[in-house]
Image (cartoon, rainbow, N blue to C red; front, top):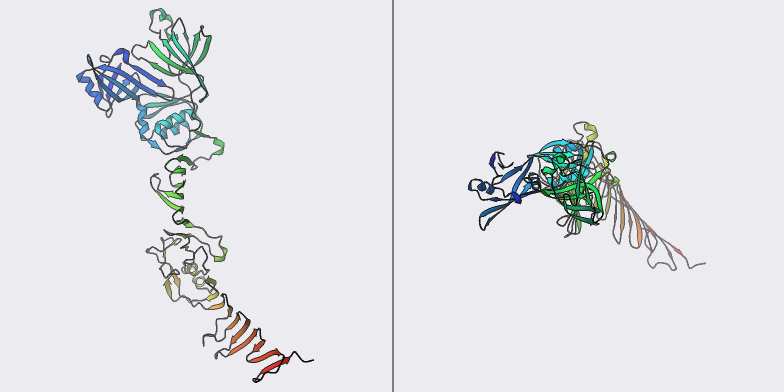
Length: 553
């Protein structure tokens, strides 16, 4: 019995047996593969109109969607109908990749989730990791799963089963002179397969074989024996494909082989003892559009590499939206970072960094626990811990206002600073360009230039420089002490190396009176006390001048 059903409600709409041209109908089914129905019908106004809608046809326990309709008018009006098994609907469910760790029953349930199909009998057991690292769809996943578990797909309406094997060995024989009308041997070295295509006449309904009808039944998966004495053929193999007429069941085409084609390049089997359950695996694929991609199965992270982009990205779990976090900008020839940066390895900063670089290149902004910005090209280095100390104000106030000894290196200067505060004044931290700094959120772990409700605050410090070095092409200078504050340099000491000499200077406390020793190419000068070697006497000696003649015996 062949019936037509409504796709949306599953309601039976019509019986088709009386309008189908009997010799035209055929079903082709390949194990874990092709499954189609073709037939022609005579025009029937009451029934043929149903073909125009998205309905499906039931033949025995197999359901087929109408995929192609061709109306033909010659002596009469007929329709040629081509149908696909309802599992072809699963092609519409596209998958970028797929990974699941569980039993075959769990994997099949996961694949069929959100569809009209339900899980039937699942004979394979044991926990396995099933991974497909290429773009496919849910029908492809079913076929891959069957190959992966060495099982075969079976269908009963909308129920899908995984069986260890279809069919059985009924002792069926196909022999020339009996039921074998044609045989073709095929050797496909590309796939490593040898199979046979045979045409047979089914005798299960023939009166002469009434007592042996159970031996004349043939279905997909059955083991049969083919005998052709003329060419010396006698082989027993498995039916992997069958094309037959479900009404008359007389002339049948079979393909038999010793194995089913396995797509080992597309299906990855991961040994259970090397994989941890619930682990997130990584789908790897290569495509013309994106090049090489490695995508986490939860679609929260992706690495993509091609001639235009080299990027590590984060996703939102949909597989549609990706944000660059670390990538190479070909236009500027720079690596750009937008995310959390752990910089504890930079010991010179004496800080446990948990920083962010937001929407700018990493060479432009690095936010440390100091709350200040220092370029990774290291044109400036600041090691104070003002922000870190301030965050302790509520838990340990005395620690939060402890003096800070830090260094500041920029341009030609290297300064050692002793900063103190009593905690009575606060201010919002700024970067080197005077821009206000904010915490990204209430966790106060990430600094940003974007305004938020969480400003980065610090105490106001007194920050005298206690030691400084500087250098230019013509002079190297060292400054000792912060001074007494009376005059700019009072109570400070200087050492200067000039192009032609060396100076040691101290400025007296309170008055700033200079105490100086100079060494140069001429001699030594100690606060205008000039000591020099000469070969003659000076014409006009000055007070405090001492000289020694080197030309006298």
